[in-house]
Length: 624
Image 1 (cartoon, helix red, strand yellow):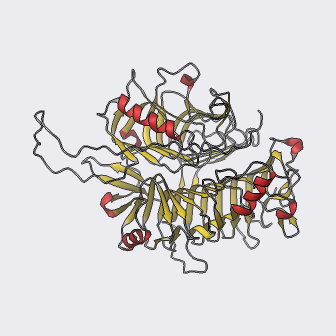
Image 2 (tube, helix red, strand yellow):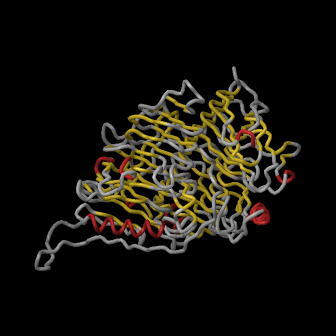
Image 3 (tube, helix red, strand yellow):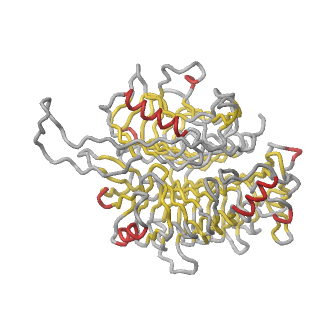
């Protein structure tokens, strides 16, 4: 298989705004109002949320979704955000299936209490994106970011599609993409698109709390499947991790195939979800935290947890000032962020235990004037989910902070603060600068799927080539991706890329990571710009020198020094040599430029241009 081409800088400005259309009164055939009990209040979720009802014609739903996909399929760095929510019921028929294609910044979610309450007969897909020659060539999935599918049943129906497309439901995606609470049947699921210019590399992704059919991984470089059921799983490129998955493949042959399998997930909490109850009332279900779990949460009924009425949330729009949001949070309300881009010039402050901050439609917080967009106190049970945080042109000290250094410990191991599908971006749609993206100072925190990205491409107006990459190195600055200072922090699906010093620094005790993916920065101009004192470069994953207990399952660090292929990085991983610090199934790989001299602590062969695309694996470190 050939290596992926360089990610291109692409922006198409065409966007589409769709309104929320919901009936508020019933009428007779003569037009007179029908008397009856008052209808439950419908939350105003803003102009970029559309709620579908099963009584709507399939053709109407299909046309709405097709129009948004046409606008969003190439709008990688755009500002439009969309959520499409399906009320309980059945959508699509055998003769007229609902076939959905999902573009950038688009969420497709069911509004049932269980995934089986919303059934879609059809497909939900993402294809390779063709970047050149009028959308006919350079077809890849490496930049298929920022999209969500959740909380529904998909009965695969390919009626009307051509021979290749009819062979599977295609989900060719990369980072910042999640599939959660799905029940998929009626056909196979393919995580690569082998129909559009053949299979190409992809760099994702994440599935949780889902029941899956026979699944073909194919060209995905790394993937985490957590707390799910799978009929079968085939293929894998470099780094495939399963935790608490019924039917997961055995990993005894590692690295051939490159599977890492944990029988249970050490700590888990599923993402909160919006649903409509039997009386038509909107609610948010907040799943409970669990330990040592396996399989889906909804097999025997409602996912364990608590239900919060939508009236207990402040439903925010991008036009709402931060001081209004903070006032509502201080009053004890939760926060629901509707789709859009929020300019944040002072921190959104989460100070009360058990507060829920839920974003839908990839709601995005952008730092203004060096602000910290989201600041969470050292209190237990806070849940932040479905939020993207962008750096702004003035450097922020941090983009999301959980707890304060040396503050009081108010954490609760039974009720960890949880970050689910929380994504970070430094550069891309505009200049971005931060010292640290994610800083966790509290103990007992769960990070369940995050992508912490210093952009390797964007629309800032830089030119291609050495000068452009030098400008990026000096202008889009992010020193550290994730800094974990708290004890007993667990990360399931930690993706961190392109930061200018350590991508991840783990200083807390008893930390656990289940799947780590990292690309070192593409753009250091010279070796002198990529030095850690006398050491060549900065490891992609650093465990602090004083740490005595730490565990990593399934980790990969990649190098592609496109600006200067002669640059070396001494180690992909750096950890203290202690009995309690253990790495399982780690690797480094060369993507055609630059060299990682060793996998960890001077151990392991070089990942250099003599073995492009061929990982250097260590089954465990230390070896005994």
